Picture 1 (cartoon, helix red, strand yellow):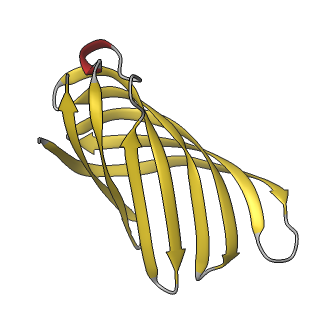
Picture 2 (spheres, rainbow, N blue to C red):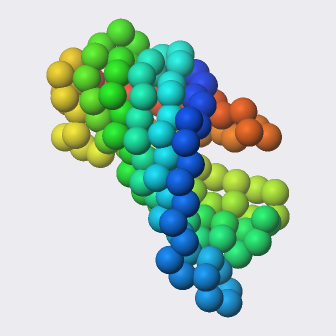
Length: 129
């Protein structure tokens, strides 16, 4: 299975808190990113975050990527799921089945994002049908 790797930058982060009750603060966040490496292009992401403290948080959401995957152009949607607690974190993403368009029609796969003190990298293991 091929693996695309690279980095991305967060161009904008627009939080919209909607519930800041005791226990956890909940927000909707709209994010714009630029990708480099195996993925070349841009994306828009909308996530729902739950933040207890700097040590405990989670989010889930969807991201629409527009650009090229290893030279094949099109779009697709990623589903995100992430948690962090006490310095441990896990972030996975999977391609929403059937969401690929253009040269990325039939795309399937998943991978991870790594946030290393604000430097973001990724890998995406994928198949093209």
